[in-house]
Length: 499
Image (cartoon, rainbow, N blue to C red; front, top):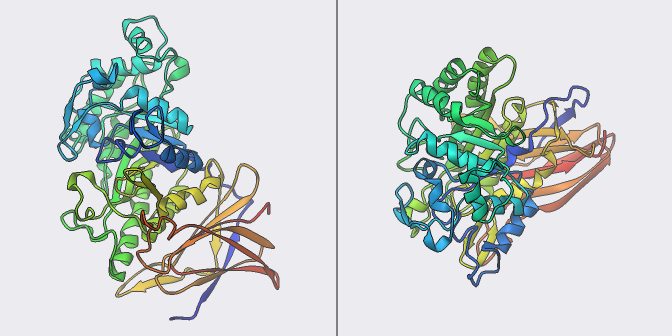
């Protein structure tokens, strides 16, 4: 084991940056596997304790997480979802096939009313994905009207008959999803024309106008941002408040053999973190285009699908995308949060995929059992960063984590001034073996939480749900500086008080 490195850290409180929109911590729930059914919705007659059909343990965990935003109904599912299938008496709703995810029957028990009731119970804003792929302008227009209007129309009367007197609050509305792929295999030019056509007719009351999101690119792509920013200008009813972007972290970078969620060698620990750090390049490349074409900063850049994607757990339906969640996932979450914080002027929303039982989940369930994942704790530790103000951080040195011929930063840091005036700092040690020491000369005392693991794939199980959880951490000033030891494989969020 190498000697512990010590890094001096200073926080520039005199040059605050952008506000870190709370929706950077947004969640994503799709009709996929057990993400909604069992994960969120069990029905009123379930033996699993529930409130109006929503399982209470998951609901309380999400309330405790202060989830700011929920995206629904997809994902690829969105472009085959017809909203009328999910309204009215549940026993009369049509049964359809979920052709994207496992070919299972979708009974449409969870629809528009259930989603908004759930969001209100959680206390979250709402993000709706409209069906561009197999829908029509008329279908999309009527859904937005159904949700947002209070006019005495047949469609609004239908909503009221279905039990909702006042309009729902739609905060964000996307026209399609992954239009480059499962949403229609379109070109950016073709999509841009469709976007302008559809949004021309998407109208909502002035006091209930959502922000409109265009479906953008993925991974290294910049042509979607380029084309959309060039072709879609605000005029009349055409609005584009943001462009979306998707990126999933694969340990191997190979969609055929992605890598395992557990039991991986250090090589895949390292490659996973190396792959996830590519997010910064994807953001900077697209933001540079927006800075040129939208100098007024009217268009946001929303990373509305991100997270780890591994080979599914053995014995599970491959279409359900169920995977275990380890300390590595918590580190991935923290590294991405730090990147989003740095570009918060444009990155005003992100949605990790997905909230329960799917991909990099906050929560895993097994019938009546539930556990919180390391990623859940990474998000919970960062709650003070919601709507905080970004603060630049200076390091005396940038230590490297070397593996073979490659290297990544061993230390990642992000700081912000919370709404209550306290300064918070988030620290990540990416290394498997070596601790990092940091000195904070501005600070006399710190307290906060530490999340780490002895094992490289440490995770929680239904038999041992508390294997990995945050522990309290405190440090005090010694000889003019507060020295913090950051263990290997760890994430820390510390309250430094009001500097």
